[in-house]
Length: 328
Image (cartoon, rainbow, N blue to C red; front, side, top):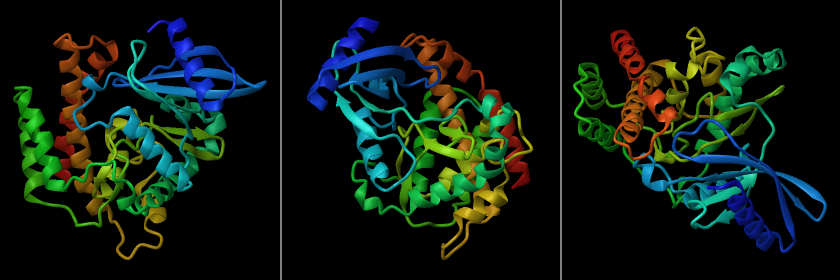
């Protein structure tokens, strides 16, 4: 899409939404997000500056169980109403010749780049608090009545494992440790949990951090109804530690702090042993996504350096699975 065409689209949609003349400025395509386009811009309406974000993309080239942008927007509206730290959705953007369907949301303050979160002195206090804050936010999400999220697919653990295995086999790759991990997940089912809204991609890189800690949760396109401990295991996957392997939770904290806040008020505590199953699931899920992203690039369906780079992380997943299965 051209900048001018995008500006006209946003001005028309937001003018109709606010019933006021809108001027768009400072349009900037943001990095990150292999399946969606994320664009930051400023909107001026009646003399007031509104820092906003446009989320749109080509749903045809998203991972098969990813939400469409209209569905993602509806889910964001629900969790925003429940007081979770997520952006407020301002307007839905219909599909057009300029872009795919999407939505405009408020731009939250905070840092999303893990390298800066790890290294910037401004976030020293935040790093000490983040693991516990993540546990508290996930507990709040999982306490929302899932019946309110009728827009989401409900998936059992076994069906989810089988779906990822089927997708893995479609790529024609022979990865013995993947086969072993799928067998492990099917032969040793996890502790049953009451179904909840699962974010599906809650990790370092999809959260915003300010000087006080967690300030926002982004990228809800893999959300579904399922076992809530999936979110905790995914947060602990080694790939999201970005080299800080001694900090099991996102590279910034430990499991004790995560589980301490998550377990508050729960009838049955989540243990590190229970979490271990979901770490294996998370690494395997990420490995299948790596295969998918590289295939989209190599098959010419959507050429992308980011997709190609993600595909090269497959060997990292193999090494992590060997370690986890040996520990288990």
